[in-house]
Length: 292
Image (tube, rainbow, N blue to C red):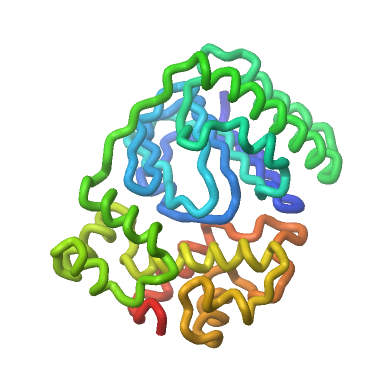
């Protein structure tokens, strides 16, 4: 087997099948987006981190990552690494199809499921033989089949166990997500948990690779993106999502996504990819108040 990189991006769908020799330990980084993501782990030595949870990956693990969840793959050693990665908007499947995946399911083994494995192999076959428009149509059909397959497997397969990154982080993240649009400043959080701002900052930077303020701002922007995609006006969305001023919201939105809020969200590309996130994160080290 040789290094491989199948990459496809069209109309809100991203498909990648990669094989990498000697992957660097910093090959991936923590990020978030408004897409559903399926990661099929074929080989390697890696750990999945989703928010405050860690999963040591085994061959044949299928990961299901929901929109707005911070996550990344941590490469543990330079063993040959192979995976499939499929990202798609929630509009690609209807409510009934989305409900086929149990709400708390994040990682499940399909190592002994030839049907599920075969669906991913079909993706390669159609990638090599179809144009972009028809490949996209086939991919959405394959995803629907895969969801039915996972729903059956979830009833028969023991789910992968996770370890908590930090009990304190788990509690803080729950508080933030329960009060995402109401939090005015970081001192509200530290007062609730009787910790200092410097401690909270170190905890977030250590485990999530970003500050509490950036975590909150990103979640709010993703919520705003979803509302705008459903037809709401940006000038009405920003306050709902915790921003005090439209100019601040507009600037943050453009920096984060790479385009202004009024642009049609899902036109013909995946709306927000990780490489842009890294650029944004590096260029905005200066902290501002959450609602500034």
